[in-house]
Image (cartoon, rainbow over all chains, first blue to last red):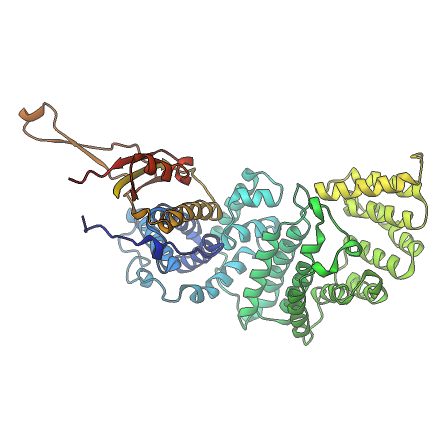
Length: 428
Length: 117
């Protein structure tokens, strides 16, 4: 009766670190794939999945072990070695990966040993040779520990599409032998830029989900912030533009609690309760913004500067719009894009008035890249409303409602339309 | 106070994400923690996956050798199999204790009183 291990549940069933499985998943996949080689990425993912499943099965009854992450890693390593033996047995009896391997010993300080592995994994997932969409999906899957279904939900895509994208990306990694390493100094700049682009997109995707019921996918924002911090933790990648990107993310994230009103509706900057902004996060953002100053100015610097002007304004009326307009003048040079031009036009409107804004918006109406972008029509509508032309305003709100956007954004546009329509009989 | 063995069998959906798996685990943890806090939980253990044997003897006492077959359960990789030993006054209490178990979403619980003579 005493031969089984008797757990004292009160002691063993401790709290589990939030997101332990997701985080550990990314770290373990990185660690295993780094040691076995990127061609075994799929094998590493399966081994990690099995280890997590085993933990679920065991810990449910027995409680959580003292060092959950080391436990998981030990099981994952054993599963991976078993799978590798099965796979290589027929071909080569003395596989070097299985002989004299130090893998049997789990790292003593698992969490800290793996920063380098995770960084290497981020660089591989964001390799410029991979298609853009694959970089995002692969980063979320492999580093972020999200499932195919979760990624599909985040990007309003079909799981099968995401799965296929991932399979292709992994094949490309094998075929082109994309390296699973932090790049050498001579290629670091280009590779880091690609990583930062992916993290920026990831954050933006979370910050304004382009459809569905959730306006903000806070988990995507949090993951983007975590990975950006990870880059800063390494001297090689902790560069000034990374500080600028993190500052930008933190300025924006600090406003997240105020960005959605009751019932999940979008609140414009001007309508937000600034007391709900996260002051501690804003302070952190200013800290990183300061650290970014010493380097070459990038688009991230300018975007962080714009966000800092908003963060520094105690009320909408106190916003220094001319400064923001000037930053946008810089941004259209550093990062020329129709969306930047649209934002610059809005800043001009705030600094100089609706007439100047409409003049700046006019040429964008024929811009193909903005044809399906509801924010252009919605900006036109707002400016016409400000200029007192409710008929034009209603026309553009209706046009905005014909473009794809999230449910809360749609409700916002409908409210605005009703407001201007109240001043106008509805004829155009 | 009597002891009861609660045997859990069931299967989980394949292909859960890490976050979903942790979510399931946390439900089990919260439940066992509640039992432990009331002093109702003695201990629990997982049973090995897919290694069950049924030992019998066809032909009763006359047969020479017992028969051993795999089973009794058709277990898959995603199975949840384990047991808890609970302290309870009687079946009524034991059943009440497991009635809110998160395990019931994945399979049945068999409650057996440990017979101590």
